[in-house]
Image (cartoon, rainbow, N blue to C red; front, side, top):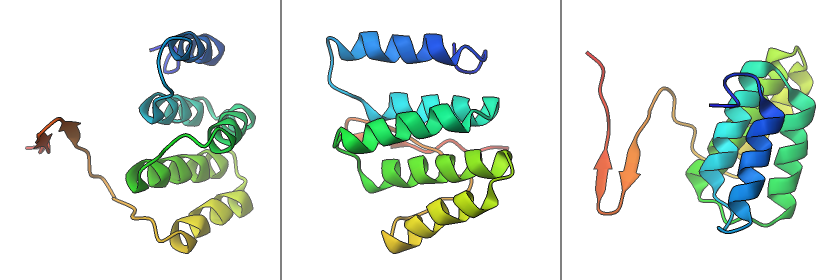
Length: 117
């Protein structure tokens, strides 16, 4: 909620406090990067991306794909199309899937795929 309100520093502090007592969770970073995209804050997004990569946080293919797409979109939103293309090319190089307009919730033993009417 902080991130969507433009309070990225506060959002980052919430994540850091969470990680004092819990393992790093990729979904928090994906949400944070989405907020960086809304706020067009590429420098902060890259700082967090680099931190995530260097920490060797375990990420599945879908999470890695989402992160690369978000970073590419952030750069595209500020007009840095060269950088955006570099990250999109990483999707292909790493053979990561890119799902267009698909969302789902994964709960233990159940996968829910919302549909629109």
